[in-house]
Length: 105
View (cartoon, rainbow, N blue to C red):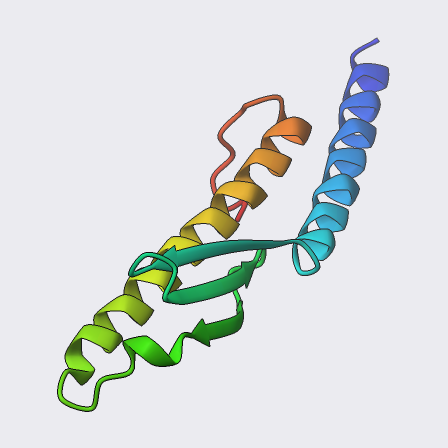
């Protein structure tokens, strides 16, 4: 009886691992967007945590205040990456049933 239970548990673990790998692959194609400066800087990231694009409105480019632009880009990038991680975490939660499994993403 125990052997069958262990075999079933291993089968379920493999199925969960397969589903997690599929979600990780899907995350590379799903995107989120974040903005800073009232939408003057927009950053798109994917669920894998990669920055996909950065859009900067020309009105926010001021050669006399490059530091402000740098801050806006950094803020938008950080928010986009956070949203991407949250998206991936939500998808993983669907598979793990809300269990926090160390090392997953």
